Length: 251
Ligand SMILES: Nc1ncnc2c1ncn2[C@@H]1O[C@H](COP(=O)(O)OP(=O)(O)OP(=O)(O)O)[C@@H](O)[C@H]1O
Ligand SMILES: [Mg+2]
Image (cartoon, rainbow, N blue to C red; front, side, top):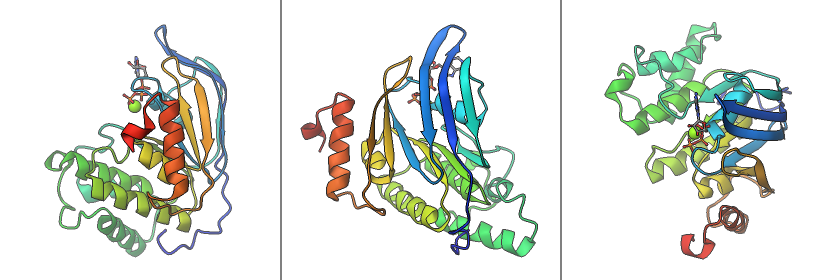
């Protein structure tokens, strides 16, 4: 995975939602959503708390079935859950190894585990259990678990929200680098507009519940992007405006 050996591998990983609506016992959450995420595309979802972003990811992964409409997916999906996706009875290493269970070669498995532990700065914590870790450390283990092994699609629900600012910037850069080596289709939820502008090929702004896609922005600037890049600042302004926030106050 880290060597870039997969770079040119063709992969089928399109995600499609067609006229999808969902409600929970009468609570309307998503309304008539149409979305096609192309193979290799990095789509970021932003929108108010409770509007249905996690529900949308669950529909894409198949954990939730839509009340109406059609969901299609091609490829192996890995999900970073918003809350506690780790197995509490497994150690840090064992949790990450869950993502590597298809790797038969023990040496390669251990090499990848070591590289991932280094990536998330958790060498020395291999034998710790989730309850012995901070929120940010758990989030980093989640990240390693989904990046482990060979997947085509990453669904990431606020994966960096519990990290300190410096680690968050580093994780963003690492994610961009990893995707450069091994392209994957990504659907990424965040409340962090800066993160959206730095990572996305396309940002979808969702409305209040029941959510529809009220606006989308393509960001075509090459990656990695610096925060000070014109394209990043411009995208942040557009997203903030769409969310009804004051760009001048926020920047
Ligand atoms: N399993 C469930 N059963 C009943 N209602 C649910 C369930 N999951 C979510 N909801 C409701 O659906 C709505 C959307 O929730 P969801 O978690 O998708 O929002 P979100 O956009 O991810 O919010 P946040 O930004 O706070 O994470 C909320 O009103 C929530 O109360
Ligand atoms: Mg959520």
